[in-house]
Length: 221
Length: 199
Image 1 (tube, each protein chain N blue to C red):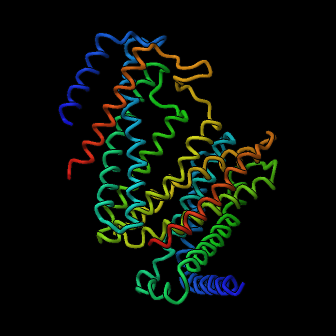
Image 2: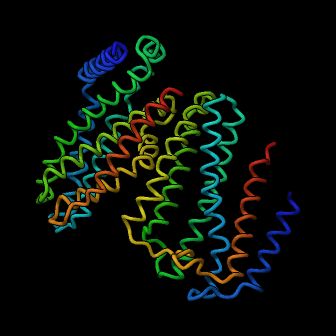
């Protein structure tokens, strides 16, 4: 009980630290939002009000979220890496607290991103949502997986010479089990088709697998 | 080992040209499966080998395990490309299109992406110790996609890919089955030989 309380304190301290640093370094957050807005606007503009298939719309939404997320969370460990403070941080807190703290901050950033871009997307593409609750649950579940895999991927690319392009290359194959069912569920939420709840189970199961795997593998870094 | 591989390969080529009958409903051109199936098999074997040596490296910090993991991934990348190209040709011959995101095609393409990402990560990290650590972790992380590719993806998308085994048993001529099994063994031996090349 004491240990879990201690770990919770460490996680919340990491969340607080990263949140304050993000406030100071607002450019990354703004870049993520602007990336999503620019991508959505350019796609909407180029399709010029054409009637788009729900499947295509769902795919566009997730592609925008995926690449905007990449712009936002790729540098999750960059501050510590540049200052050389990660080993010290690991000594004072523990590695798991750092991972889960950063994962939670990444999740909050992605929730903010989706809250910003989802209404704009629906308006610009004139999408009628038939099942709003399904859409919200799908987005939240998708973001959990993206945050888990994204945080570990960010830790992997910290020492890489080229980071910008590398992050999405590494992240895409491992998040595909979330990506494809999430696109299908999003498509269903735009239509009157019946909900395939097994797909929700798949996304939730892969979220759990990714969180567990990130927790186990981060200790080896 | 070289002699065995050479003789087996020669025997398989002769058997494919002279003894194997045209495959039911697919004709003479479909004999490309004797190249396509073994290369796909080795691509998957190499993927698991790379992950196995990655886990071994993380457990022991033995850099020879890291080298083997990287070698398996490099070989896997070559084999997966060969398999994809031969599969696309087979697809064009039988379905009329090189690519249609069939579940098997998606699986093989995800393997290309994983191998490509792994090798790019290795190229991007210059410090030998860090490179070994991060690439081993990525190799193991990418294994997580396997249950999805094997169990979930085929349920999500309709497949045109021929399934050799059905509820009524193996739906292939016995000569085809024998040569195909021999080709699988041959390709596996080639992979093992190439893995041991640096020893």
